[in-house]
Image (cartoon, rainbow, N blue to C red; front, side):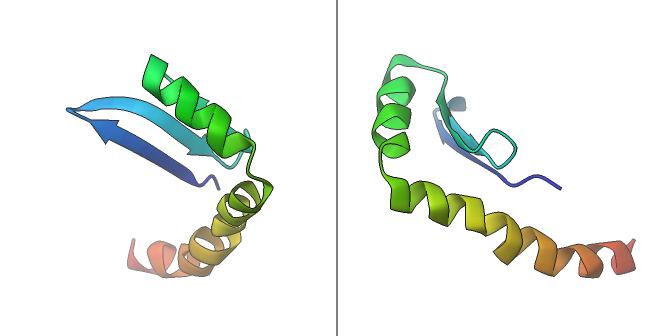
Length: 67
């Protein structure tokens, strides 16, 4: 199970957080600057890593039951 949060502008993805990588990755110049800023914030990184347990693991059984 992987938690992914992507940010888009004009259908172009500029940043992504992946729980398997554990940090933000930028895909454009603007996204790289944002990713560097966000990766330096330890509380934001720990909150994003916790989203896997908060959202994904709590809802996996519901999704499998509906399939």
